[in-house]
Image (cartoon, rainbow, N blue to C red; front, side, top):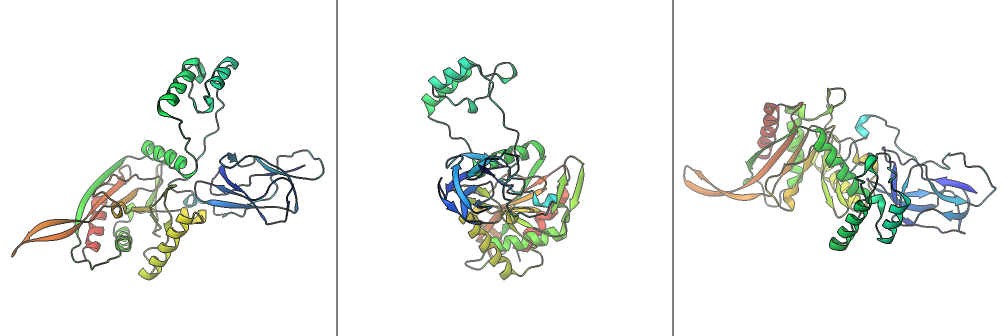
Length: 368
């Protein structure tokens, strides 16, 4: 038999979840034919057959996680010793720079832990229908105890089964924890008068333009900070990550070179990447390398926020829901529309003055 293992999917992704098998044991396949669809933290990927042949066995069912290099299926053929090599290889980006590693929801994987438990404890877990892989042991060297198993069983009985996070949501949880642990975050907030905006104004595109101009005026916020080497990399090109909410979790596709493109070109690009995200067909390279982020949560609800800065970036702007506010002027009072803004920044490398000047530049552009 000849094994076909899960290929390297690129972008630092080490695991994927099986979404759908397109073949079954006994089926003949041709080179390039889709074998299986898998879901990573970034996209749904179709894996093609590396050769012609007949499928002998498929490893894993829909919903199972499989890691890079683990057997995915077998081809019928002559008996051979498994050399540990991967039959077939996915075409991936060769850009190995650090700019290709960022994404909210990106996968960084710790080595899988093997639960430590005695045979008696494993038998108890089986009797109580408890999955010990989802238990953190409280005994010596994190050994799982009978109390741990019984506590897990009571939780399941009282609150129902826990659903392990997978795919985008698991990666998002890990990255949010990473950001919280690393970044010294400060958020400043203000409101800008947008009463002069025309009816049906494209709010997101106004924000895109404003952030591009602000990055030009205060470039310290369009940067990456290397925590391990205490170095700051100012980036001339502004690649704006735009948060997109989906039922699967938070995605941040990247709108490239926002300071050098026309508004129409940017609008077309934004429409395309949003559609690709919702269909889960966006290429991983379109989710990597953002230099600063925009979260326009005000299209749903909320005035002010406390946006999370994802390293290595140093800033993110949140735009809240536009609201009416009464103002006074020489002739009396009037109701104007205001947009609330929340700018979070990494105070390790960005000063309060730099952040305030950036926010002022955004507000000035929106007020034009």
